[in-house]
Image (cartoon, rainbow, N blue to C red; front, side, top):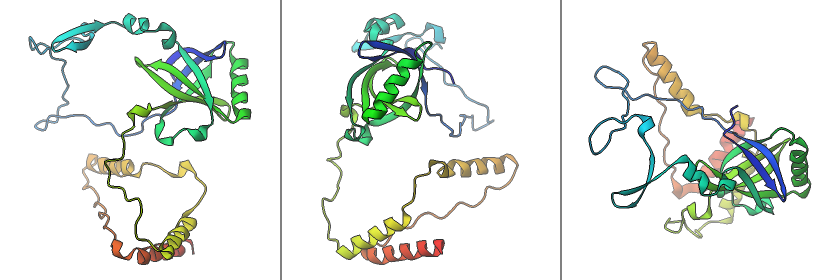
Amino acid sequence: MRALWTGALSFGLINIPIRLFSATEDHGLSFNMLHKKDLSPIRFARICKVDGKEIPYEDIVKGYEYEKGDFVVLTDEDFKRADVRKTKLIDIVDFTYASEIDPILFEKPYYLEPGKGASKAYVILREALKKSKKVAIAKYVLHNREHIGVVMPHDNLLILDQLRYESEIRSPKSLDIPKEAMTTSKEVTMALKLIEHLTTHFKPKQYHDTYTEELQKIIDEKAHGKKPHKKGKEPKITDLQDIMGMLKKSLEKHHKKTA
């Protein structure tokens, strides 16, 4: 793996040399845009709006429009100059319990690897977090933006889970969500039974992207001159006037599968 960022993890007066790696990777299919007439790949050009000419990448700079039509150009040095300390530091500012963090805030996980000579300090922080059953809240700059994240132990690793700012979470107040409805205790009891029968230990390896797998089959079939297999049936909307009956049928169906 290639490190995305190199700097230090600040814990009190201790700065632990750290390398940051993405903990996830995309396994989705990659598609190309083609000319319908001859199936030739197309490309998107960087065109100047004034003279209409294509601009090479090395002649492109970043600018901020502070007034209509007026821009301030920012260089790489300007981004560092904003706060050079923050660009090289994951700064732990608080400790808290993971249960206090709303799951909707979690955005992206990263692995943290200790740098040269930092193993002892890394392990001390990791074990202290494990024993305290707490997590660390940290601030850092990545991709020219300041983020907050949670530093926590994961087996022998320390991971940094990037959080969304609370201001980035949209309010659900405009949604038509019922506070209560006319339900019966029998309906709720039947729903609880179905939940109980479908409850199991979470095994992430058993879940995979079946939609992409089906799409890959279609691609393979078409690549070999075969007619793509028939598509499945679209799901039917449940008759919600008889929820009790549908819950019973769902329970019976599960019993037959496990029998």
